[in-house]
Length: 328
Figure (cartoon, rainbow, N blue to C red):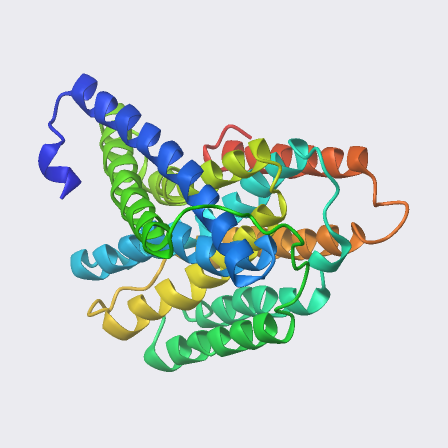
C-alpha cells in the first residue's frame, strides 16, 4: 500500500522516510501510554504487558515482512531480517535502554524461567537452519515455543504486579480503540520506513545482504526502538525488558513458521546466516539472559554497571554492523 505512493525520486522517497519515522515514534509513545493504563486496569505488571501486548504490537512489521517474503519468494531476505531484528532488539535497543535507565529494575521482574522460551527459540531456529531450509515439521517445532511461552507467563503472571492504579477517566472503549489504532499506525508507518529505506539503499547501491540484515532488520525494529525511547522518558523501563523478550520470541515463533508452511521455493537459504549471524544471535541472547539475571545479584545491582553493560551491547552491535559492511 505504502509502495504505491513512493516514487523513484530520491528526495521524495527520503521525505516519505522521515514522515513514516515520525509516525512510528508518535504511535509508539501513545501505545506505551495506553499499555500502562491497561496494566493498571488488569492488575498485572508493566513487565508482563511489555512481554505480551507490546511485544506483539511491535512484532507486526516482522510478520508483514514474512508474509511478503512468501508471496514474492524471497525467504532468505525474511529470515535474515528476523535474525538481524532480534540481534538489534538485544544489542541496540536493550543496550540503549540500559544506558538511559534512571531507575533500578524490579528484582521480581527478572526470573530465569521467563528466559527459557527465549533461549529455546534460538536453539530451535538454529536446528531448523542446519539444512538451510525450513520445512513444515521444523515450523511445527518452532510453533511449540508459543505454549511454553504462554505457560511461563501464566505461572509468573503476578511478577512485579504494580501498586499503581494508573487511574484514568478513559473508558474501556477508548482504551481498546486507542490500542488498536496505535497498532495500525505502527504497522503502516513501519511498512513505510522499510519500503522507503529499501528504495534509498537501492539508489545508493547498498547490497541485498546489508538490506536484509541491517536496513530491514532495523526498520522492522523501529517500533521496539520507539517504544523503548518512550518507556525511558516515562521511566517505565520494565516494559523494555518484557518487550525485547516477547518480541524476539514472537519474531521467531510466528514469522518463521509462516515461511516454513507456505513457501513454494526450493532454493536454499544463505549458509552465512547459520555460520555467522545465528552465532551472533546465540551469543547475544545468552549474554542478554545472563545480564538480566545478574541484575538481581550484588555487586551487579548497580545503575552504573547496568549503564556500562548497555554501552558494551551497543558497541558490540556497531562492531557487528561494521563487520557486515566489510569495514572490519
